[in-house]
Amino acid sequence: MTVTVTVSSGQTYTVSSGETDINDTVVSGGILNVLSGGTIINTADSYVIYLSGGTASGTTINSGGSEQVLSGSTASGTTVLNGGEQDVRGGAAINTTISGGVEVVRPYGGARRH
Image (tube, rainbow, N blue to C red):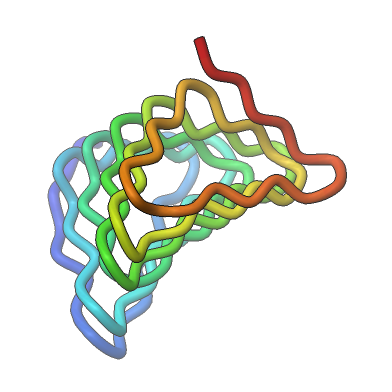
């Protein structure tokens, strides 16, 4: 199943195994949780994305946004804009572009760029 959602302030939205979301938007105060087997593509993030074993590609992290790449997760092609943060905590971040933002790689996390 493929869907597109806007995650509003105060809302938590979960992408479960077998689900793919394309062009989601996470506004300030919204939380997107991607479980193992779930996939998000081209997400615009202005608050929090938890990759809880899931996969993300093409995410743009805006000011005030955070992408938490947890154990078993993979984030590829992420762009971190000014005021945004990618926090790699046991997962893998591949080909992240830092454009004024921050990437933090914690113990057991991995990051690779060309």
